[in-house]
Image 1 (cartoon, rainbow, N blue to C red):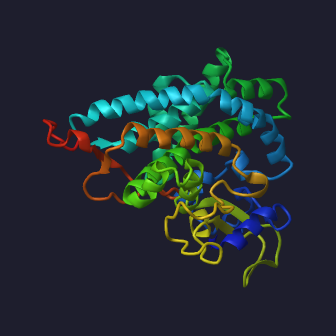
Image 2: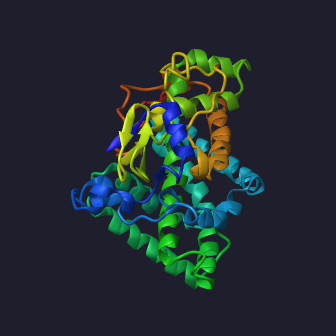
Length: 374
């Protein structure tokens, strides 16, 4: 497959759907002609997928309209008090644990926060949160054959439970639409988009939150600019999104016809293209010293949330979560420091964020706390 790594080329490709580029694995020539092993992790994860991320207009627009009202500004702001309460509750736990030991801020804060927010939006019971996290992590790693079958079974069970006992969440609303008129939402579209909500609503925000805390702790001069009011949190968050978006690459677009040109390359119909957002967000032709984390730079039009008809519906929700969580971390834990060696990235076909984020609360060092790694 090819990867579109430059900013202008990626933005242009995203803008030119569906004239030059289309989605959905049925458009992959080599797969259709039997040249690829369907057990390949990338193929297995996406084969037969019909979510909004993998569909084309008019189907994409039809389904997007059904869920758009869930992500309105008013609905997102309605969630703000709940997000603030969850953030405070989780940081209470971090503070308490930090008196006795080092804390993995990823597992104890960055993971549960978006899980609880998306679970509320979908009206998923708390006891299912660990299952969603586990299935999402294993599915994206590419290391667990058969995990997609587990994921589909979990979603099918969720749909049946919601159908028997509907509630006010998004899943129940979509089930009602589907049961009323299958022309508006097919059974397969219902299932595939529920999976998309799980993955996109949890994994991406979790990754940016983890990477953002690590970036600021590794760049104390940048953090000081925020603490002294020289740079607003909103500007810093946009730089975090540019510099370290969770979705390093997203699959997949395919050339819709012969003779599609990307830069100096001309491609025939049916060629696969990875959307390399992390690379495009560090394109030196667009940003000076693009590999440098610099919250003072003017917020450019990064591609962390995509562009064009598939621009991320959940972008306002993600920005709201980050805008609450990141300031709270550094206000509640002013003496936060990284502990030990930096971890490598979590195993993933597509995502990029630290495998863990081990920290200490310096106020407790030398005051009876053992600071053992937990």
